[in-house]
Length: 136
Image 1 (cartoon, rainbow, N blue to C red):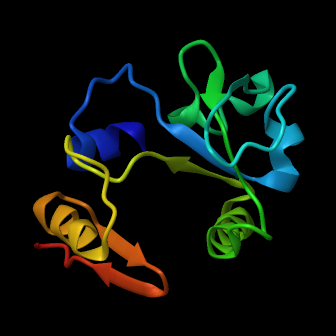
Image 2 (image 1 turned 180 degrees about the vertical axis):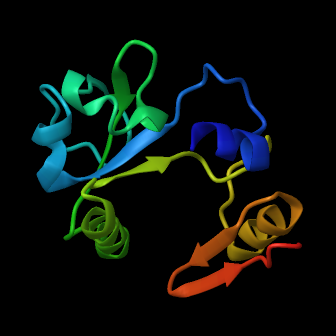
C-alpha cells in the first residue's frame, strides 16, 4: 500500500514512513507501551508479531507514529476503522497528510483539486464518496 500511495499521490522517498490510525481500544494489541494519542505526537514500538500484519505503517525500526481514534471524539473515522476491522480483522488504517507536495488540504475544494490532479481512486468527504472510473 505504501508503494501504491507513493506512485499515485505522494511521490516521495520510499524510506519515509506512513502512520497508523488505530481504534483506541485495540492499541495494546498492536503497540508496546502506547497510550491514547489522537494527534500523532508519539512513536511507539509495534509488537513484533503485528509488524507483518501492518507493514505499510511499520517504520524500518519497527515503530509507528500512532494516531488513536476514539468513538467519542471522532465517531465517523472510528466507524470506518471498525468497518475495516470487520472486513479484514485489522483495526488499523494507513494515515498520511492529505496533500501532494503542497500545503495540507483544509477545505473540500482543495481535496477535490488533489483528487482530480492525482491518480487517487476515491475521495470521501463526510458521507459523500467520489470514485474515478478505471479509465480516468
